[in-house]
Amino acid sequence: MAYTSSLHLSKHLLLPKPNRGLVDRAILPVESTMEGTALRNYDLLLRHDLVVAQEINLFVHYCLLAMPGVRATEVRRVISHPMALAHCGRALARLGVDREPVEDTAGAVEMLRSNMMLDTAAIASPRAADLYGLDVLAHGLQDESWNVTRFLLLSKPPSPVAVPVDADAKTSMVVAHRGGSMAVVLKVLSAFSSRNINMSKLEVINNEAGVGEPRPPVMILDTGARGAPTLRAFPHVLYVDCEGAADDPLVREAIKEIEKFAVFVRVLGCYAADTNVYDLQ
Image (tube, rainbow, N blue to C red; front, side, top):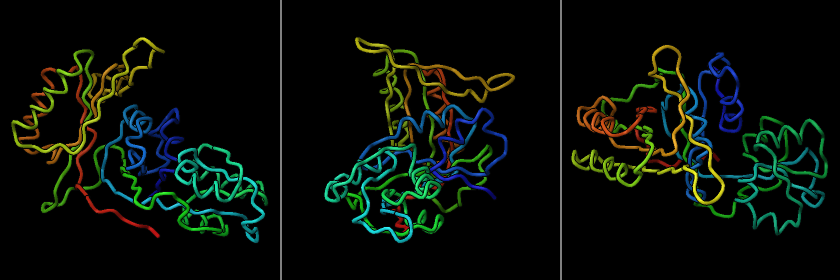
């Protein structure tokens, strides 16, 4: 079974033929306690026929990696994803090094190793050090130890992971509409609250052109369209997570009610809710 990690997921989702069978699973970071929701990653998910099979919450743990034998005093530059550089700002300031953003943390490690950079270090995970044979110059480089990232395990439909009978289930969906944003939000809230269904996430995205620069619409793959799945553009989108399985009668009722006033509804997945926060150190 092949996996693609969150370090490379954006590349795989942007492939012209994402269902070419290169991997069986993908791991997508979707939100963190410091940065909020990663909307770009959600947008990538919506463009493809993928389902959420599992969620996992991990403490963010960054390491400073260098080529074997390189000492911290020899490092003049640090490369990594812009978010990783921002999360380690205080530590990097103490080191007094230049910072250079690259596409992702795995890309930084690959660049470091393939170019044999002896004056450069990369910020990545301790696992990356093992995989690429690099030295760890410092552990716990992140500024805040409480920062947690939520990841989603994605798969081609149908979901390969069944929700255990005794587990609490969670359903993720996207609700798209073309106007009256606040009214739609209130109706969505009412559809769940009237049935005593708790919502764990409600993210409202308004990309309608305003006074400033026009924002591009959110593109969503309509997997239920007749014929081939079709990409559709929407200026207003709601990301919703609710407690309960998608086939639960009350959840089904709520979704059917939302479908009456929303332009488009797509269930992204149903999976076991996991409130644990794991540490991979």
